[in-house]
Image 1 (cartoon, one colour):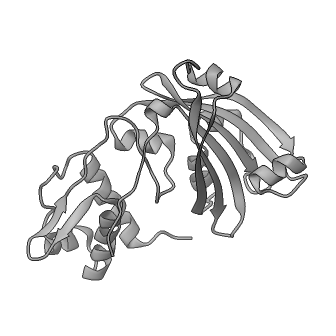
Image 2 (tube, rainbow, N blue to C red):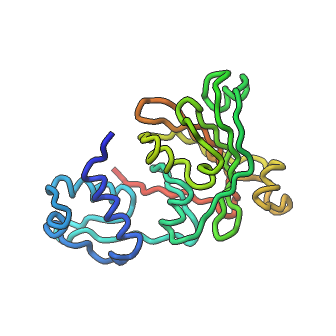
Length: 241
């Protein structure tokens, strides 16, 4: 599915805001100037700006223009309303991240696993345990389940780099939406092992469970992300209507 022009403009403006090309609290270039820069219609530009407003990056002011209100976080903060990878979040906040694969295997789901993930019983999946590090600190352990028939050719090497880049750039998959549930759960032995948690200080982890769908309506991924509580942060931009 081809991307719309306004999405490309949105991503370019977003990147320029994040890298401080447009400084915090300053106005973006005038609308007519941006229209000339991107060679687009007024409606197309306004759709792109509307996405930035929804993300909490800018604020439109009648008669004045569009002001940059984005501020990077001191620690990685994930967005509620977007599907954003750990690496993308770290880059957005100017931080260094890397991923280590602790386990890469293939499973045929039993009844209990099927009920947990939402995949059919006996479905064949890749099961991956990945630890995400930020500035050499292990912050998250992901338990990833990817449907084999929807994600052919997945390897440990791909999992250590970027699975979503592989899906989008190699398999040309369009990732559409992700349903998420956030809970707090007791620390497990795996959490203690990989997240370097001291059970005396932390007896729980924040857990984000997600079912993610592609443009064909296929649920291709179930992931349980287990976060260190001292680094757990999700944010949203709420608008009063």
